[in-house]
Amino acid sequence: MEQIRTTLTVAGLLIIAVGLAWVAHGTGTIHLPASDFITKQSVWTTNGSLVAVFGLIVLWSSRRFLR
Picture (cartoon, rainbow, N blue to C red):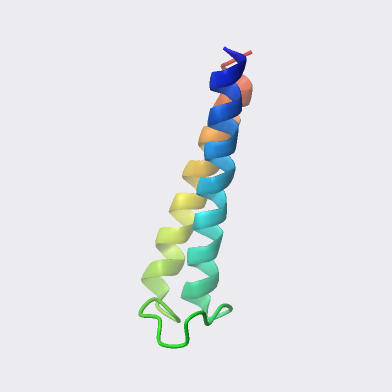
């Protein structure tokens, strides 16, 4: 059970990181690469926010339900 909890915790953190990266690209904070198609596109800010919230749910549920 501890291995599942650790795996879900790591997965949740990675999902949150991807979501935050999408938000940063969507707001224009990150310009890597300079010709990226998601830079300053509000749809990616929304998508990134939703993905980050999903990551928080995974992280929270791994801590809450797998004790």
